[in-house]
Each structure stands twice: as structure tokens, then as C-alpha cells.
Length: 396
Image 1: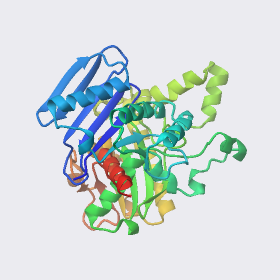
Image 2: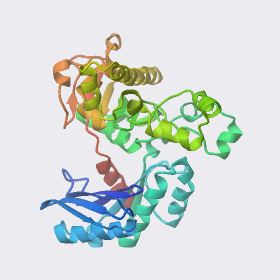
Image 3: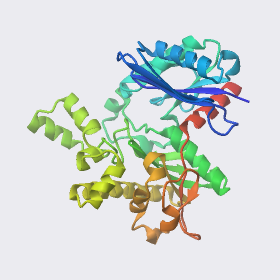
Image 4: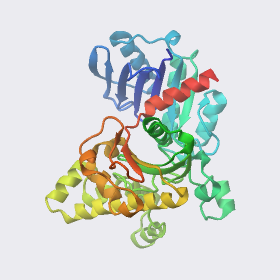
């Protein structure tokens, strides 16, 4: 049985899972957080249940040592002889990586070269890669990129109408994100419906604090809502999604906003937080029920943006077989699922209220029998997808 340690390294954290693509559920999960901040913590859940330890964690290398020590003490036992691979989530692969790749020094250099396109993510991903390669020098390490699934987009979908020399010099184009989730879910839909993925046209709605949509034809992405960065597209927890770029120029000219202030406004102070004062949809719904008109408008904007992308992707795909909701909001929020597709009944897109009710922990059809378009909820599993791709690379 293949065993993969999946790592998702942030600027001050390491999320991890130990799992096998052939087994149900992970053998262990954990989170190392507040790395380099003087008061770190690890939460590990293995065979003996959850364990929490607080201590100083100087850097990612110290964080990886802590992960290994925690496995050794609390299980399951983990060493190089038991691992098929270590799979790493990497946010930005640019146009250099069209799929997962075995990590060597050249790949590390290329990921670093792409850091200007994801300055908050790629350097952190590299810190985890360096630490894990030090801890497991004899185990294959595989990078799985958030952007690679979207590399099948045609030029018409990924090209911005910007001066082509400027765009080429600065690598400006649509790359997308959440690709690991979109890939997993689009294939899980086909498996659940008993259909060949090659004959299925699917719209995937990955709705969480970060949110994105994709149009998938025959298992390949032909368009996605996020752009050069994860700021574009749908309304998100704190991010604007699509906005007239002249708004930035207007704020710079009339309000003295510099690039840092604009970055903070668009990425951290906007979205549902900026409109409704909340990032958690449960709080937004409570505010709507209490009569808060700002919250009602925010929810309407959220639904309107999703509905617009669904319509756009219907046009691009020509035929839609399935629309699938996934991620934290998509899997758990019946109000958003119903509201996002309201008014599309004429196109054969209908949500059944009874089937839609409640959280969904397993693939579930929420459209009525006989609907022209099957609407589903499919829980995503990015770690499992990373493990699968890592095993494929090692076996190739």
C-alpha cells in the first residue's frame, strides 16, 4: 500500500496528512502553526486521538523535526522506509508546470523564480520543501501545483487584452488557482454519476473563504474565474473578486492610496467582510435574518457573481451536464447553493429544497429527478488528490 506524507506549508504553518490513495481516510493529520513567532503549537491527530503541544518553533526545519518527533511519540510510526513519497502543495506553477513533477534542485529554482507571481505563497511552499527534503533526503518529493489543472485553457481564455510585450515580459496571464480541488471534484462527479469523465461537461464551484469557478470539458479545464492571482473572479471572504481596474487608479489619484494600501484593501478588507462586516457565511445569514440590509445586499452580490459565471461557462461549454458545489461554503451552506442558482430554471438548472437541505459530507445530488442539468454537492479532498498525483509521478 502506497503511503504519502502530504505537506501544505504556509508562511508560518505546516499542515500535513499521512494517507494512502488506496485507503479510506488519513492515518494522521496535523497542523504546526505560529512558526517563528515565539509561541508555536502543533495539533496532531493519530491513532490515539488528538494531541496538542505548545512550544517555540524557530523555523520550518524545526517545524518538520517537531512533526517527525510527534509521529514517533504518538504514531503512526513514520520513517523513510514506509513512505512512497512526500507530496507538496505549491500554489503557483506559472506556465512552466502543466502537471505534478518530481522535485530536484532545478525544480526548486523554478518555483523560486515564479515567486513574484505568488509572493505570499511560493516562498512559504519552498520553506516546507527545503525542510522536508532535509528530513527525508532519500524519499521522492513531488510538487503538485494549484495552477497546473488550468494549463489546458486555450489562449482565448488565459490571455489578457494587455500590450503583449508587457504581458510576456512580466508573465501576465490568467493562471487560476484551486486547481487540485477542481481536478479532484470534476473526476469525483464522473465517478459518482457512473459516467466517463471524457464525455462530461461540468461547472465546478469551489466556495470557501477563497472561491473560484471552473468550466471543465471532458476532464480538462477550459476556463476559470481566478486570474493571474487568486484575487479575481467570485466574491470571497475578504477579497473583492472582479473589479474595474480603474477603481485602483481612482483611489491612487484621489485618495492617495499606494500599492500596499491597495493590496490591503482588495485582499484583506473587501469581499463579504467589506460589504457585510463578516467573513463567516453563518454570521451573514444571521445578520440577514435580523434585517441587516447591508448583509442582504452582500449576499445578493455573492449570488449574482456566481450566477454570472455559471451563465458564462454554459456559453463556453455549449452543453452542461453537471454543476457541482464544493469546499467549506459549497458543502455546508444550503442558502448559498439555492441562491446562487435561483432563476436558472429555464435552462434546466433546478435545486430541490428537500435534497438541498443541510450539510453534505458525501456526494449528493440536490437537483430533482429528470432535471436537464444534475446539480450536486461533492466534498473536496485536495490532500488525497495530491497523494494520488505523487504516487503517479513516482510510479512513472
